Length: 88
Image (cartoon, rainbow, N blue to C red; front, side, top):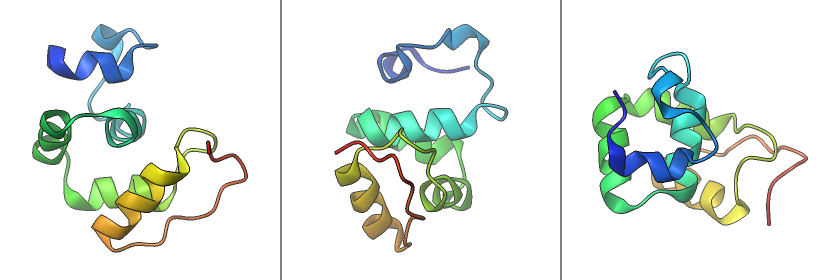
């Protein structure tokens, strides 16, 4: 179950239909890109650091702001793969 304080970061999705495992790339991407500190804390409680690192290392094309991707790469000590479509 996704708590209500996470819903704003998944605004374009039917949150009731999202599955924490099946849709983890989407959830992790949106929360790290748009989320608040409480939302990010929730994310790190729900997903392993390795799951989160995998999503940041292999970003969904066109889904990340360049600043967010660089920030999380530094925090997680990884170099995200370069995609052709990164939001500036």
